[in-house]
Image (cartoon, rainbow, N blue to C red):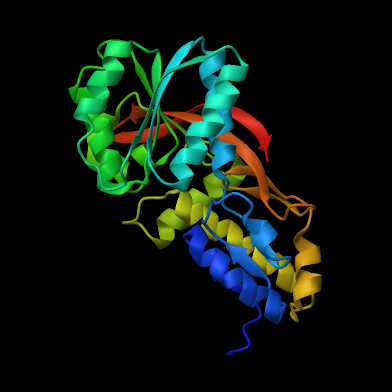
Length: 295
C-alpha cells in the first residue's frame, strides 16, 4: 500500500513464502536476508536470496567427515522440516562415500534434555555426531550434554550445522565448553581477505559493543544487492529490470566470493568448516577447510 520499491528481510521461510505472492502481484523485488528453506526462490520470479540453503551447509560437512576418515556417524536433529532435511541430506551424501549411520535420532523442538540420547549414541561408538538444532537454549543444551556425557572424552567429534556454536548467541554463552566443536557455515570470521577485514573494521567502529555474526553479513550483502538494483535501474527499481540486473551478479563479500545464480536467483557461495578455538582471550569459530561455489 505504501508502494515500496523493494521488500527485504524475512528471518523465517514461512514469512518469506507468505510475502512471495505479494511480491509477484506487485512486481516488486523481494530480497530474503535469512530464510533457508529449500525451493524458496521458486515461490516468486521476483524473489532473490542472499542467505543460504540447508543443503549448502550440510553437503560440505558430509564431504569433510568422509575426507577426514570418519566411517561411522550418528545423526541427532530437531524434529521439524529443516532438521529432517539436514538428516536426509547428510545421510545420502555420507553413505554415497562409504559411510555408515549408527543412530538416527529426532527430538522434539522443545526438548532440552539430551542426556539419554547422548548415552545411546555413546554406546554405539561412532566417530562423530552430526547435529542440527534451531539455536538458543536447545543448542546450548545439546553441546553441554555432549561434553557432560563423555562423548568427547571417548574420541567422538561433534559436527554441527552452525546454530550450536553461533558466533553471537550460543558461542558466547557456552564459553570454553564449546572448544573443539565443528560447524559448517558460509561465514568464516578469521577469513584473511580484504572484504572481510574492511567489513569487520567498519562494523566494529560503528558498533563497538556488538559481536559480528552471520546475520550481519547477510544484511550487508542484502544491502549491497539492493544498491546494485538501484544503480542498474537509474534509481527507478522496476521489478523486472531490477531482478534481471542481479541474475549472475558477482561481488566480493565478507563471506568470500558470492554470486546470484542466473537461473535460480539463489546465492552461490563458499562454505567453511570451522572449529571453536581460543585466539588470545576470545573464542572463535576458526576456518579450517572450505568448499567453493556451493549451490
